[in-house]
Image (cartoon, one colour):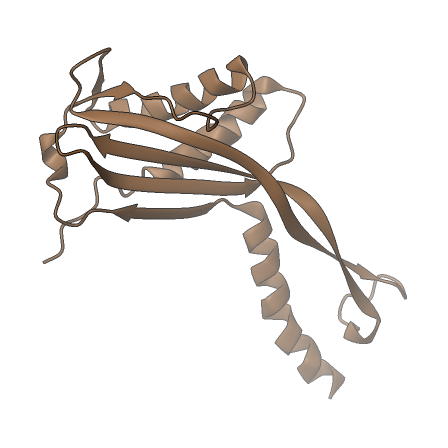
Length: 176
């Protein structure tokens, strides 16, 4: 009977481990929008929404600029088709730590214990707004448990991966 209980818990454990490693990505958009009509963008500011310091703000904008350039957008200082803004938030999330109090027998679920703790989770929401229509047309956010490295290049690499994943399905495919 113990073996059956172990196989039931294994997929749950693997799912939790997989979630801890990647980014959580969500997008929403106005389905009536012709996304092919947009060619230029300019940065807009949301009071209280930007990063806590100038270096992080520059890194976030650079990562978003890279993705928009790959999608064929040109950045301009005025009269753009789109306004782009972001909101960066750090909040408390839960992490789960599994340990085996009786030794290294991972298959013995009778001695497996789990402890939860608060960990910082960072979320960046990217907003695309059509100034001519005065309407939000697309919003995407990426969340990830923060484990900032001492090396800024490694931190930027993590941020860049999140933005690549966020913009992977932009522009949204029209419904058929």
